[in-house]
Image 1 (cartoon, helix red, strand yellow):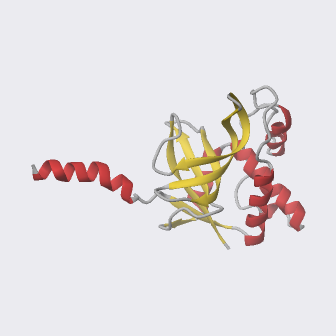
Image 2 (spheres, one colour):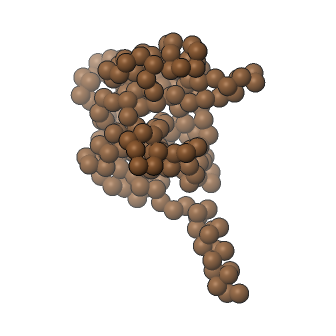
Image 3 (cartoon, one colour):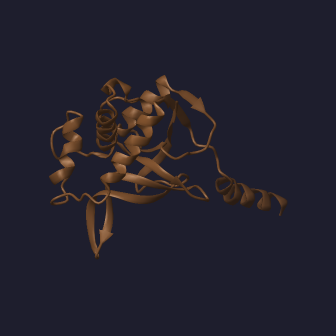
Length: 194
């Protein structure tokens, strides 16, 4: 019976107690980080024209050199930092991650070039998921840290029901750092230090 209680405790309580996620921190000018978050937030509500990564959202993919109608979760983040650089009169080299449309390329970059951190998720961090054994995944910008492992994010290339209709675009989402996102497994967090 004691073994059963111990197993139950491990299965149920350990995930709830907060297994630390892998986090890597990159240097970023704090003004740039705050302005990039404002720019990203200004995009919330932009909806794809036909649900095929098209319409106004194509500007994100084009900004990173991808063809129109490409997935744009990572490209939207890079575009936000690019626009923030223009507003703050900073060179694009101030963007702390590579110009890419691949979420996991950004995570791999942070893993190679960042500092491993034990700290929890914070506002302005990125969260990254990965499709098993592929380069594909998803990335979002944390806007608020909530309780019980939940965060509120600014999510490019995400979906939301609006008036009973599934729409694709840029939305505020509520995510849990301990759970997969559909078929994608949570990979880790990218943080920023100044």
